[in-house]
Image (cartoon, rainbow, N blue to C red; front, side, top):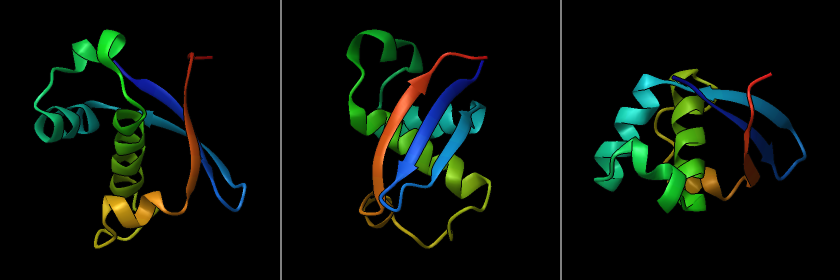
Length: 83
């Protein structure tokens, strides 16, 4: 299971991301909420957090950058259907 996200930074850089198992576990740990509840209880924060986790996993951002610091550089995140 993957979740496809389109991330747009404030500088208009766009990235296609794919959240996988490690992001789902990080999500469940941080929010104390099953990933299966996303369909009915999703908040934008949930998707931003998963995008942040993908960026950290892929080393697109430094590991020392906090979620809040990273969020200040982001314009939007959207869930995309798989191609």
